[in-house]
Amino acid sequence: MRVVGIDIGGTMIKYGLLSLEGQILKSGEMATEAEKGVEILFEKICSVVENFSREEKILGIAVSGTGQIDGSIGKVVGGNEIIPGWIGTNLVERLEKKFNLPAVLENDVNCAALGEKWLGAGKGEDNFLCLTIGTGIGGGIVLNGDVFRGNTCVAGEFGHIQIVKNGVQCLCGKKGCYERYASATALVRMAKERTGEDLNGKEIFDREKAGIPVFTELVKDWVDYFTDGLSTIIYIFNPPLIVVGGGVTKQGDYLLEKINKSLSEKLGINFKKNLSVKFAELGNNAGMLGAEYLLLKKLGKI
Image (cartoon, rainbow, N blue to C red; front, top):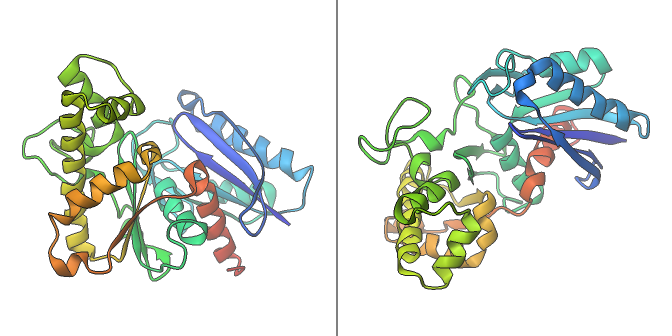
């Protein structure tokens, strides 16, 4: 038996045929074409399931998706309308009706957190936080071995903690949100403001490593913003582990050491005790694997 795993992003849909142990046996991706709306998206998802179903006996469908999602029923309840018609869609209901297979749908960062718990940096931990640094900053909260969704299934929106009063305008409507200062997008924006150059994250870190003063100061400020928000989150949750994902983590120990040094200066002794900060281990596959973990839990296989 196999599981079909699907990770829906605003730009690309990643998919895979997964073993029950979390091995990715086959994988691929296609453009989301978000602007074409939810029905085209549904057709794309169905084509993936149908193609894998011709080859293998499928146990179920595990979907990680963008937006605010009530994972208990598989319904999109909010978020930015990147995909017209996505908000309000109960994808699980539609997939189960069409294929007569069990399905799950959960927010992508929640799935990433659960994927890391199952097979990655959070393995063996029942309580930890996950942050993803990308266009914004997403958050996942794992409590007692399960994802904590909150009262209306939107818990973990760490990116919208305000860290600068009357700061940079955020898409959420507020000013000074965490993700406006500590996301990968923020790093690129800050580099443009200070140097006039359009650079990606790798290019910025390469220049910082080369000792160019403006980039040394830039990365120092960006890390400082990141640990400002992170320290606030730690003071609220007092977790044993923080798992950080996103493209910037390709910088490895070089960046992790900077984060730990900056963070240590902002935490009291009892908040630092037994605290570990790790970079995520599953990369772009975390969402699919976390969704599979949820499916297997739903079926009593874990």
